[in-house]
Length: 497
Ligand SMILES: Cc1cc2nc3c(=O)[nH]c(=O)nc-3n(C[C@H](O)[C@H](O)[C@H](O)COP(=O)(O)OP(=O)(O)OC[C@H]3O[C@@H](n4cnc5c(N)ncnc54)[C@H](O)[C@@H]3O)c2cc1C
Image (cartoon, rainbow, N blue to C red; front, side):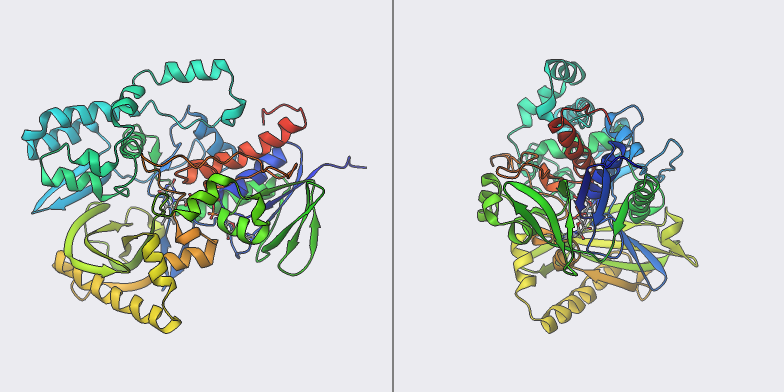
């Protein structure tokens, strides 16, 4: 007879939940994942409309560089392999302004040359920018174990690997992207720096993101985001895990400081020895668990959204001819457009023609996104069902007209595939304010500190992108591994899994 193993129940089948499930099985536990949707992936997905695939997540995947700890994690969970093919994308993004275009190329020398050509007056700052991106390549996401398990050797080795990065931290650690952009005199460089990541983010995020891409550590795997999630699901099942779809968890049952099981949407109770919630923390602490378990700093963040904002988007996808060529992600000026509470004068177009999955009968998918804030989320939330549909339709028309103005060759050829808002992410993933990622790390705000465990519950371990700001796929995938390592540590067993 098989020896009885401890049973781990994972709530949520996004990247964090799938990772937790895979590591739980590798660690010798039985494991079941309960996911409220019909497919895995959570925010890391895509969907089909009118025969086209809309890929809706990976713009860059940190951890694609072999030899890094994070690459090993992606490989262990089956998301990447040594044979993974990557999209032939040679830049982070481009910005157009007054007829000029500048690009953050993967090749830093090329970026430097181009910046100097458009803005010789900023030479000193440009050279420093390139040098600091180079230094930021040293900032590798720690994926081996949770920080509280680090010993002195781990800190020494990190110190050695990051010899120059502290210079960037020292100079820019307290600046937002917007503050930083003001060091440049050139209007196009200022725009470029603020175009992609929310400009309230710490400037460091821009350096680290661009550095991963320039270092070959932030590529886009071919085959789109949903397929990456499906590869993880396959790995989980191959290891013997069970995943139950359309099976939401309504409540986590707590008895005498222990999480004893979960109550499912169909009323069944499932027992567990350990529980790993890998869902957005807002529904976790407002629905599945009594609010008294909510960490203080998280409560503070929810109470002051102006200090702890999140970002989402109003997005539209189209089918256009494959001949349409623009840079893969390009930001352009537009006639001012009011979406939600704010008016926007920049917008991006991203063309997906590089991936055969997003191409059909000589046509490719392109997408655009207007960044949305907490206030915009509230605006959408306040609309009636009919107003919501009308507003979406009107904005789609407005956006379509603006794209055709910028690219006259697309006039009359933009077939709308779909449009979605922050409320889509809330409905589909339970995402707080429709957020793509966790709280924005504003340089002035105190970090939201989430421990891997909750006070008052002995056997519940947190996972998901909300465990560490600013979230994203690397946080999600490592958080699943870290949750299982914490369980093993509590059992006084090896954390090598
Ligand atoms: C448009 C977009 C672009 C992005 N681009 C990038 C990028 O380029 N790079 C990057 O690193 N990150 C990117 N991200 C962020 C990334 O997708 C997320 O950080 C990551 O997918 C979060 O994973 P997660 O498992 O923590 O949470 P989620 O993906 O939210 O997964 C949680 C899962 O739990 C399920 N769930 C919720 N409540 C329950 C319940 N009660 N019972 C059962 N199941 C439940 C949900 O349905 C969901 O499947 C992007 C996100 C978006 C939306």
